[in-house]
Amino acid sequence: MCGLCGEVTFDGRPADVSAVQRMSGQLAVRGPDGEGLWAQGRVAFGHRRLSVIDLSACGAQPMLDPELGLAAVFNGCIYNYRELREELGALGYRFTSTSDTEVILKGYHRWGTNVVDHLVGMFAVVLHERDSGRVVLARDRLGVKPLYLAETPGRLRFASSLPALVAAGDVDTTIDPVALHHYLTWHAVVPAPLTVLRGVRKLPPATVRVVEADGTGHEHRYWAPDHTRRAEFAGYDERDWEDAVLASLRTAVRRRTVADVPVGVLLSGGLDSSLIVGLLAEAGQPGLATYSIGFESVGGREGDEFAYSDVIAERYGTDHHRIRVTGDELVGALGHAVGAMSEPMVSHDVVAFDLLSQHVSQTTKVVQSGQGADEVFAGYHWYPPLAGLDPAAGVDAYAAAFFDRDHAGTARVLQPQWLTEEDVSRRFVEEHFARPGADTAVDAALRLDTEVMLVDDPVKRVDNTTMAWGLEARVPFLDHELVELAACVPPGLKLAEGGKGILKRLGRRVIPREVIDRPKGYFPVPAITHLEGKVLGLVRDALSSDAARARGLFRPEYVAGLLDAPNAELTPLRGNKLWQLGLLELWLQQHGI
Image (cartoon, rainbow, N blue to C red; front, side, top):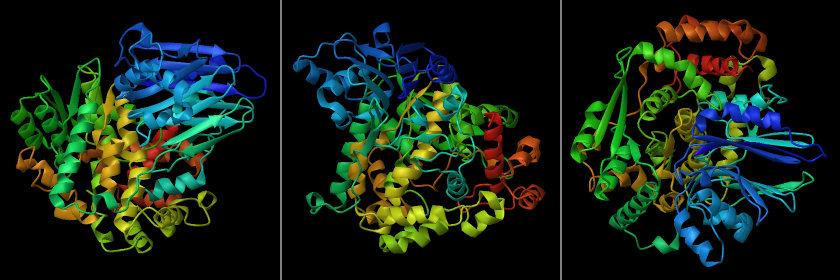
């Protein structure tokens, strides 16, 4: 797990090494164990290393293979790298390290861009061919690892974070109105390739982009799960599906133990993270470290779920760490959490994960986490209203349950010059639901949330906050083979028992029932959902600042109304609408935009 960056030019100029160094400096927190820089004419790569596999200097990056004429920078982990190394070795390739990075290099030489089909894991990788001048950029199937791009005439820059590209300079930092509409509609989700800034884009998940030496190129999507009922599963009954999902989840959890350092678990006390602990214990992993976080109650809302995480920790005898955060600590951490965001994210979970990651990183480098289960197995409340509908008929129900506001509501928030003429967010959902490959509205919503919302909310949140403290997070529920299988499961089995029915049923075969048969929990940070005191003061100052007035995004009368009643307007997801506006302005100001 690391941070990568670089520049490629197409107009005869050498790459700007100083710009790459500025990007690398911004990424230092992602890789505290080492740094590397390589430049050759029109290409320059930078890297910050977090040593997890092959801790020796042989695993350092940028990694060069003069014999094959290749150079690469890589962020992530390839869980099947040992098997691939053995396969490539049998084909005559010689290795000088035990790292997964070298396996990608040799694999690319053998299979070209099809190497991505062989990789099981999370990855963002950029390779350069010395002889052709070609550059290849690729991102993993579920977008667990980020890859941001900034293109200007004659030049391409890339980095693991958006702020790193801003630090390099010469980036168009004006607000993108379409992205802003998505931000205000989709609970701060901005679908790839857009970001909130006009001059920065992100490579979509499951995408390979090839750029030739003259700047021409193409990209293609290499993977997409099929959300239809397939003939091979026609005879499956409920127990067959449970057995298949449990076996696939066991494999996913086992894969993510591959490391040359210990692997812990972020244990919320909910079904998903508890299942991970139970399966690791079942596999006999000794000395498992688990970590839970809780906050002070605010406005009558409880701030922890220690009662449930304690049940799992005690049942399996883990080395459990309870982390309790005071209100003052939470306020003090807000600045760091906002700074850790590659893009503005309104979920209060961002602050929770940032604080949790800070504590966990003091004792471990790698953890498994339960993100993704709700999007893959239908755990959210907006899926049941879609039951029985075809995809076209499901758009209204999905928008009503998930969107923070409709187009008219967005018009009440934004100054006229920032409002798009049409409802671009609604259109995006309509087009996605209309794509072939989803049998029902539930299937279409799960596909949309897995490919878009999941990537640019919970997955991005976990990557940004863990990597801001040099901590690697692995997400077994996003194992691509498990996701492929889950996509085929009949919607009724997923919607059962209020959502994630199939997981709950197989979970009762593995972990204590009391953490399953209870109301659905969330990662609560009450001080963000109920704004008061110092947190409200931060938001008020940001929205009232000279920078905010000069930017002129929001209608002053709308902001004034929210500030008069800070907790009166909530989204359908129970998010605070004032926090949504304040967070965007805090993020822009903190990153000097």
